[in-house]
Amino acid sequence: MKRKPATFPTGARTLAALLLVVATVLGMSCISSDPASSELGPITKTVWVRWLVGVRVHFVAIVTNTGLDPIELHDINYEMRTPSGALVESGGVPQSYPKRIGPGQSAVIGRTVTADTAEKTEDVASVDIDFEARKVASADNLLTVVTSEYRGADDILQAQVVGEVRNDGSKLYDNIKVAVVMLDVDGRAIGFATAKLPVGALAPGESAQFATNADLPADQVDGRVHALLVFASDQ
Image (cartoon, rainbow, N blue to C red; front, side, top):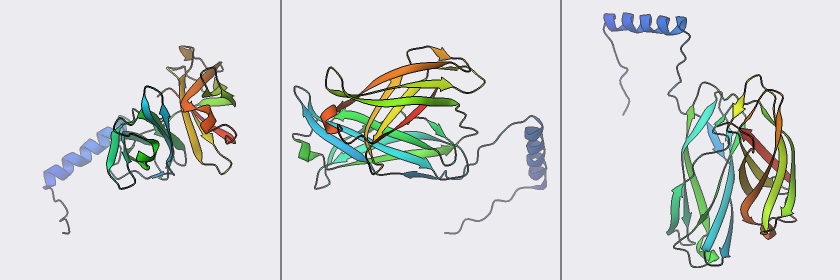
């Protein structure tokens, strides 16, 4: 059904115009309610059995802002299904990394969970991710990942990545988090890990090193990691 355009009395139109002028003078910004544009790349999953824990599932995907405005990702949820399409596990993902991305920029969504109702790895045939992209005023982030290196298995046989982050902006950044995506030779995401910088904040020009272990057996990615995609933000 075609929606009829809303009409307003003359007085209401005058008031709306005055409010628009006031907002402009005060420097207020309005976020458009038009749908934000984003594209979710392929979802990669790794499924294994951990002794005394059960079936573990690691999944990761890249989201790209295909619109003209900065966006923030909200209400991120996942569903895991059997080969027949029956629901195995569902839940939420706390956030993407980073939360806000500018036009043409990307963020990563990933998590490792236990599929409580799965009895074997074959029970988890697919993972679906759903989220809402909302337009925001800005996606300011001037943290630069200077170096990153895949180190292989650590002492507990998990995939390890180390690197360094530098503040190239003019303001202080605190509560900085790093997200690492391991890519294969085809550029496909095969692993995901997060870390918090060991310092409370970075002043302009300062840098700090990080180390993170993926909640993923190293033998699942060893020999396949061709490159790293690393995000750093204070979000």
